[in-house]
Length: 388
Image: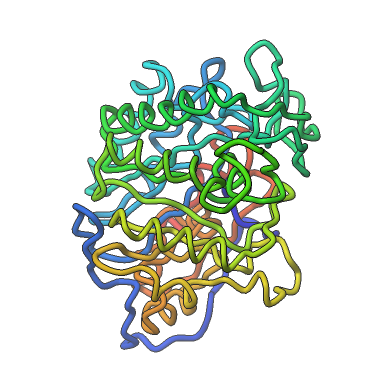
């Protein structure tokens, strides 16, 4: 699941005072992978639970939503999208594992491209963060080890505590790696400009990486190199389908969502990011510490973009996400700590967010009660500047 947390109502606010002549790094062009972007305001992946059911199929409502938020030369990243039936952990999340889903996503990519925008699909497997109600035949969710996640799954009947997972057998791991490859290939057939691997937020890739969630004794557990094996195999499989210039990855070094922990966060993630950097991906998408789930960020969790920037070299860009304002986004890019800034909640409520930043306009407040599930309310009915 992907979204930021806060509360607000559906009216207008002004973000901060400004000087109209203020230079905004957010609004300068940049090359990311094979794309020339006209600005650096990225729409973050946001789980919205509005796929057509049954079948978890994208449809016209989703196409309208993404099309509204497309801008010429701007990058959108889709909501997290399961690569297999077992990858689902929340009701009505669109998948990328059937032909019907591919056809549904084509409506979305066509709507975005019609407005000159670019769009990546985020590839997802929730692992243990699921409920048997969401699994085929009410099966147990799968995980590196039989350790239950904290938190809840959004089911058809409402939120339910995650089910106890079963540990994947070794021979079951390679087919999941293949699912990521196939999901990437389907995404490109659906017209996406690229894909983002969801390696964050306590889902399956991070479950394997964590020495708390992963208690395996085979070659996918134990030392860091073994725990990272699945993570890197998925990355290589996606690269073989999409190519480096069409592939990004999301990481969350400070994450505690789903009960994830690491004995040595900096050691784990500095090693991992160094490895990912060797693939020369289009971008690495980093979730900042303030979204870690900690009220007060402890030093061990203070793993933001400034610390990782020196590890990302070559043409790979760094996207920073996590509660940014217009001002903090401009400042982070100006400092050199990030290349692009991803916005979540503000993009939900402001389909024309880059235009509002350009004009220093007020922002619509988001309505948190409509984030997950429902119809067009709180989804496609937020006004743009022309009608605000």
